[in-house]
Picture 1 (tube, rainbow, N blue to C red):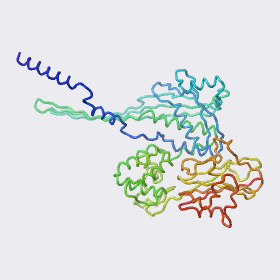
Picture 2 (picture 1 turned 135 degrees about the vertical axis):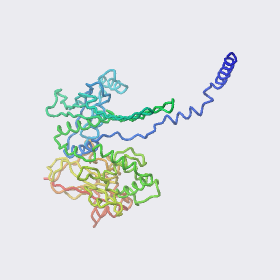
Picture 3 (picture 1 turned 60 degrees about the horizontal axis):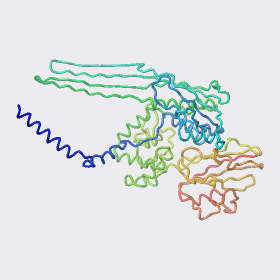
Picture 4 (picture 1 turned 90 degrees about the horizontal axis):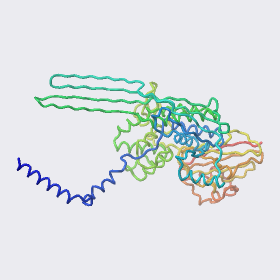
Length: 528
């Protein structure tokens, strides 16, 4: 026993000495260098969206067509009366209002923090400038009020179990379903009177699903025994659920306030969460080669690629994916991913008579002929999605009065080069886009372009000063026009360009300068 104790003590001493000699972290530099890599996120970020993201874009268009003037709005802190939903509802409301104002510029949020515990550098500087009279904060006209009114946990629980046992083994399985409900109420108030506008409210409730499965077992061989336990759990987070309720509630109160048919924006079939799940199953079932082939065909059909096939994930294909991602408000990476796939598939998926989603875009079956509102043609027929352009006036009417201002809206179905020319009642044609006030020649298919910019109406205005017929012609092109051939068509802003072309119409002149796909949109009106 003494010998054993002595050997143990000697061994321990040797271990201590060896560990002490190796105690410096400098000897473990490779290990610490690895931490810089392992600390990186495993997943790339994606755009945070809800089931009503397309509905918010739809509302933006309704507000633009209604010509809702820019309204200053703010929001109270939206408390959680249940004390169980730890999310920032106010910031979600700001995002929803922003998405509804991309083209219409209907709302500008007044950001002013009054809670001294939450004031930061910006707020402190703001206070100093306000006190010195060097800063002016516009008074809001409206404000959003409301609360997360309830969180009922475990409203419904459904459990099942089964097990078998004998002298030498036992095996059991359990499955549980749990439903939790919570609700959000929003109101719109008049800031001048601090009164809640009657009839302008939203009260919606959502169920959060939870599921757990477990498998347990044990056995015995002679006197030795073994046990095992396998379990999986699924629980939906309150963050995405809250965002969905906020988007829905904001659409409701804004739609009721603006008196626009907001319910049209809530009937989009493909905003259903089951749509994304079905898309994800299809995407996971594709190999990498099949995914590349899909993006090649789809982006060719969409007009983003010049040829239907490339040699794998080339620079050309990445650029096409990048352009499509920008048009669809996806994080622009140029890399194929599920988010991009899901956006493309919205043009290739419909719902059958039984309410189930059908993958018909690339299906070889006869169902392919039954497409409903498929805006992209079949790539296998070597037809490309042509550039489309829509031009309209605001307010939208055929006759304008003298001294009345007119605003133009332009929308393209995908990224394009844009040129717009205005012809007054005397036949004088001038270039009004691009100009020194709106220099970006290349526009995306996301949202509407407003001429003049609605956000800064003081830049310039189109005022009807003479009676007669007037019009606007816009050209959207796949490639930039050859501006060097007739430079007078492009260099001068708001000056007559009639002398730049003779015996040929402006539309045919622009078409002759195009080296790719070109589309025209126009609008006519009378001034009395």
